Image (tube, rainbow, N blue to C red; front, top):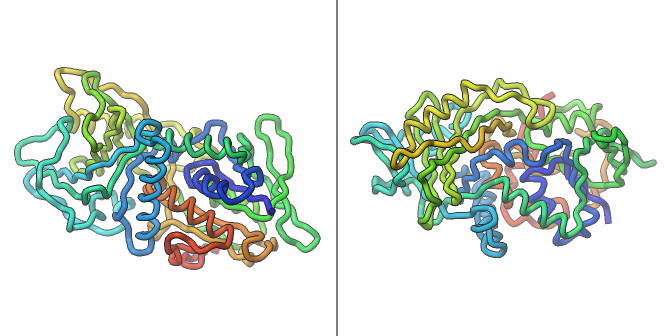
Length: 413
């Protein structure tokens, strides 16, 4: 059986390894992660908001499949207790009497609200706001999610569960290891991957016929390193995002069935606020496309002004009950992989774009890419992992992703 190497042990990489491990010999699956700390970018610092139907047509089946897989795995493995899986209520909050105004699909780059892509049919002025949301008379709160169509998880805990499941089954994790180069056989086909242990500086080879690049915002650099003779560049870029996790000393855990996801444009940016099962509240929305991508996650310094803006929003929007203090639990900075179309790339990279490297045909070999999920990486993670595992094995996919292949994007020269 050809070994399969997955470059990147974030949510997309571990999700794919998880599904592959049920049909392949687990020890033939290798996860390569260069960062000394696991889940130290978007996989650990994302909001964890899940949606079933907030997606454009090209990703609608993938979004639905992933939402169903999140629910199934949570039921089977105690997700409510282990990674805070809860159903959520999506709300749009507008200051003053004017309700939300829909803009375009590219809300992330435009700096507008994610609520813009929620279905109109779900909108309702019914007051379902949680008690911790500070409001004034005349403010408008709209329910924008159909019942049972949104949910919430704690991403880092979900990633830890998926990785532990993989390792328990026999999947091999190499960390901190960096992919260095490709080795070819006498036919010029992919035969080995050279990796460097960055702690010992010892290089070794992993025999393999299949590689999946799932390195998030770093996928372009990984591809360029391994295929330096390629005249192509992957159509991916990075978008930096700051986040803040807070709690009030007098808040208890959410004792309702639902958590809440609140989207508002009350500030100079568009805050997103997600309550979690453990009583913490996550605030984000400060995004920067010009912040340079570091060599590794965690190497960029957190900007104090961005955090102050988030703290200011927390003080305006959250109620500190009975004079309790808002406590900052965690400050975060992560880099999300984005595409110009706003949809991920899932599929095989053609051999002609590998700079002289050939691969075995059909399911016996290949170089694959799964990246570009933007703000939907956690939400689409399980569906992506399942679909990529099926693609790699040459099986029919559980969701139609025909419009997400690399041939649907313009490879940059």
